[in-house]
Length: 144
Image (cartoon, rainbow, N blue to C red; front, top):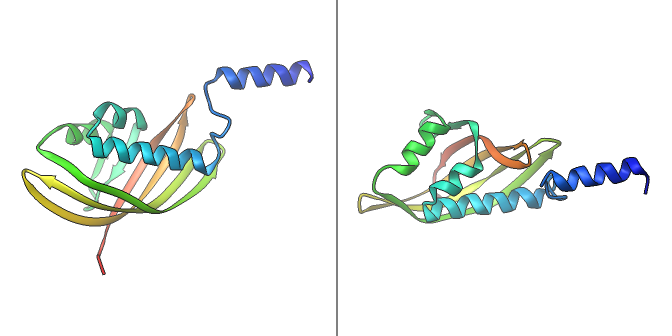
């Protein structure tokens, strides 16, 4: 191994970025972590997975930045009873990835339970040695 190759290898190891950072499985794992954080209503975990410059577009076209997203997440009497992803597709780029998929969910708000499904797009971007959602869009899907 040349000195240059050794230095490059050491700098990659020191960065904390896993070797599989650009592989689809990395983003499937991140999506599982995000879904688990939503189900557990774990604000710290959700916050750590969202980029500081997040732009989220909701069901009705409303736009929220990270502060607004986290404010909504942390308020009120609501909880997911189910948040199940399917049909995930990952498209990887050098410093980003686009994940699309579907979610079937049951949410309880103030004691009232509603079910629904939506399609989503998450754009994951590298922030230092971490991957975070920088853009999110959800669209309601009619049930057959």
